[in-house]
Length: 279
Image (cartoon, rainbow, N blue to C red):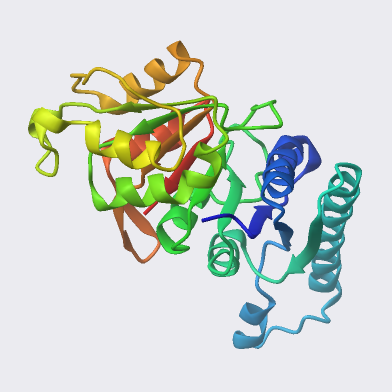
């Protein structure tokens, strides 16, 4: 498996700069096409359905502002990836808001790269549930970059949170192109005695062999016990100098509300480490 199409969500340069560079470096490593998408933030279809005149001076002025802002994001993206000598790239301005727009466009990409919503930002362009929505609705692996992350690469030291679930192996398989280039991939398991899909006697050995057959340098850490897995995982990641977490995303969708698993919720909300999730 390899990534041949990578989609990155475009945002303010101060927020998206490192996200774009991470996506571009992955595209360069994979010889992939990088698509940068700037959503205007509102669907003009809504106006048509509500019989609102888009030519109204006030509305037209606001729409022009949104289009101009998205166009600026695309120009900044194209300038940066051209400087980085990305093999193939394309910038798009797309009508609509980010949750649904990125989820739909991402379904024809091998990897989606987005940022986690910064709830302290005064005027965020995306909704608070943006990462959760894309992870749950795109059907593709999602690489989530936390606010304030200042590195231009990910995946040198990777930690897999493993419980042998469908979501867990999906995330591992989706991450293989990154794992192959990693200096070290560590597998960690929590409370394996309580996991119905895990054979405690063979915990970790099967997934380690699977990864080793792909030429991946893998280490299985001793099984961990902790009631607060999400918090413990993030702390262990910091101790091990991890620069990418790989894990399954757990939850259910109900309209635009999410019932997320506790570990998923903690990692999405608190991680300072980039996370690759698959649902």
